[in-house]
Amino acid sequence: MVHKLAIEAEGLLKRFEGTLAVSGVDLAVPEGAIYGILGPNGAGKTTTIRMLLGIIDPDEGWRTLLGSDDPVSMAHAVGYLPEERGLYPAMKAYEAIAFMGALRGLSLDEGRRRGRELLEGYGLGYAADRQVRQLSKGMAQTVQLLGTLVHRPRLVVFDEPFSGLDAINQGKLELLIRDLAKEGTTVIFSTHVIAHAERLCDEVAIIAGGEVPFAGPVDEARDRIRPRVRLETAARDGRWRDALPEGTRPEGAFWNFELPETGVEPLLRALIEGEAGIQSLSIERAGLHDAFVEIAGEAAARQLEADMAHEVGSETR
Ligand SMILES: Nc1ncnc2c1ncn2[C@@H]1O[C@H](COP(=O)(O)OP(=O)(O)OP(=O)(O)O)[C@@H](O)[C@H]1O
Image (cartoon, rainbow, N blue to C red; front, side, top):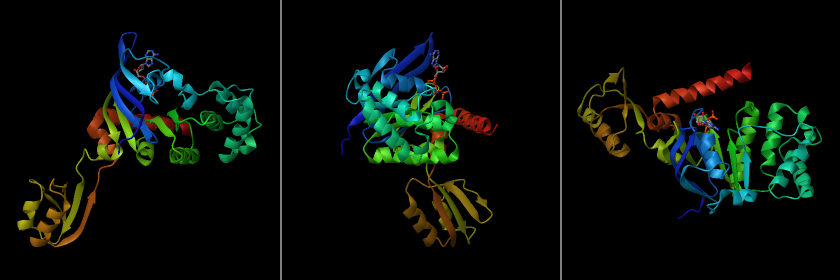
């Protein structure tokens, strides 16, 4: 099946005052997908998003947004939550949402009506008439997020939407993202938290040091690493050991090794026919974290973990 693309980009490159922020980003976001841009702080996520949306122009390369090579002309069909959060403090919550819709071409009356509806639907109806300055940081962030949806865009782009939200609100946002995708909206979000991308995304772009070493389905990223086998045998030795990768050493009664390329069934057959006496056997597919380490490198993965620890630390301070 050929998917239409919500976004396509090739060779996007951006320099700031001579330093290369992003070099040669290629990616393709299928319509209706949940797409993650995953990388540590400073990797180039925001710069990439800004280029995709036409907020800044690339120095090299090209992109199309909803089929147009002039992304700004599609602004009415796009919702964008920038990394810098901010609403007018004196506006009431529902008005702030209506205002954001008006910037994207929606009438204020309709925006006010939908603003109340969105707040209600998100469990924040009680705060609709509160001024933005009276809202908590997380609530204000949610109001801003709802404001990106009020004009019913075909594509939404959220820059680090989970940052600054507590666990409950992170869960609510995950549900919202799934609901949007179910309705056919394309959702792109950036994150430095692998778990969010792993739980939500159909596809990811892995970005590190301004480069995108992988862009594609999450399953394809995970398949970059061979699954691990953990086997427990009654027998210590025998012909069956030839089916294990060379150099596999016993760890007590256990054997840990990479699943051979021939796959599960030939391995099982050799173990049974060779009378290994299988006591237990598990085959574990790599998660996105291991795939990230393989694709982006140890250093980028360490930086990702440091970013997460920093965020958790700043939330609990
Ligand atoms: N306007 C700018 N002027 C100069 N340098 C910039 C500018 N914007 C970004 N950079 C640099 O480009 C690189 C990529 O930054 P970018 O904000 O895109 O990363 P990011 O992955 O979004 O990180 P974070 O999650 O910390 O926002 C960084 O080295 C950053 O310092």
